[in-house]
Amino acid sequence: MRGSLRLVSIQSICLLFILVSLAPTPAKAQSWSAIEQTLASKYPELPKPALIKAFGFLVANENVVHNTSYMTIIDFDLPSTVERMYVINLQSLALKKYLVAHGRNSGEKYAIRFSNELNSWMTSLGVYLTGAPYIGEHGLSMILHGMEPTNSNAEARGIVLHGAPYVSEETIHVLGYLGRSLGCPAVNPQYSTELVQELSNGSVFLAYHM
Image 1 (cartoon, rainbow, N blue to C red):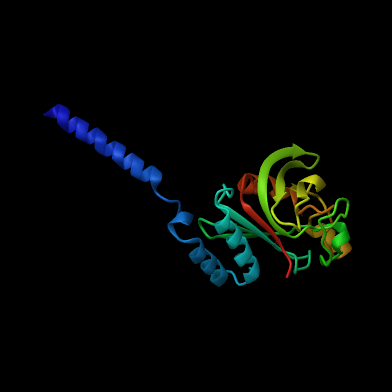
Image 2 (cartoon, one colour):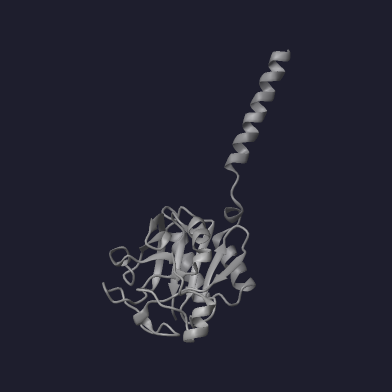
């Protein structure tokens, strides 16, 4: 009898473990549509067309979006002097904002020109899928895979997320605008390691301009 009870107990524990391991993450517990609507309501600063585009890509490409914990939207309608890079935690629905550079040939304070061409030194718009982290000339950085015709040359151009000292309030104070990159979305080195660790390996990353 004791042996039977022990067997049932072990089976119950195993069943409980399986159920817990199969339980959806907080993000999966709701539909992506509901999360999108919640974010639009909670954070009016997020451009609605950008949210629609980013979530549309996520829903249509869940097989390749392996990192569903985070989503990034850069609003290039805004000047470089404000925190226009929005990193969304898709589980807690928290939002963090960062300064981010645009390409030097895209404009000074505002990015007004965009290109997918090699050696253009401009920002490329569209949806990216984040790739692997690596150590480069700017320290810990993150590969970006262009997923649209507007950014399909991202890898050939070496477009990555990296830290850069010219992304700072001090630079804005001196120049009147943020320092500019060769087309990469460069961020303050103070935050680059954390961002790479959170966003790498398959999250949605959108460079948006209306």
